Image 1: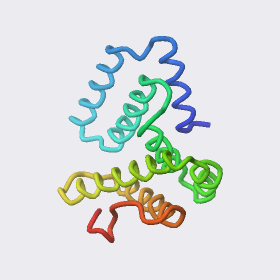
Image 2: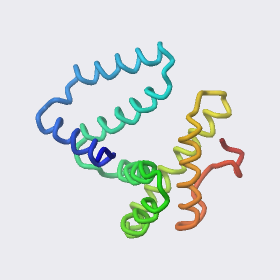
Image 3: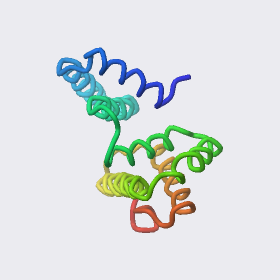
Image 4: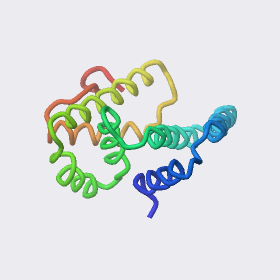
Length: 155
């Protein structure tokens, strides 16, 4: 099965073998520039996630703010409510308070960033916004109010 965890495992293997080199990153940058020139926004979004994961893999073990972003990515990677509910119960709600704070911060930052981009007229993936709204609403239910959204003048 292809998932964020599978991608992370592949990248960890590449890092361990020394394959995440400046040349590899330059190739990714070229891919992004090429897809931007073609105005292929769907592939650009996929490449953006891949680059973020490559950066995390290059840093090694997740820690600090990256851990909050990791949990957000895991929730966003689960399109079904049951999968997200299980992740909330088994992982997020079991986190120490410091990691919950990092998760809240990551979610609020992403919501605010997308809201700003949408207000500025940038091309923002509607599916991502809908999925992020679901995760934010679930976070509000589980953790209390988290961040910027339509009720706060966002999106």
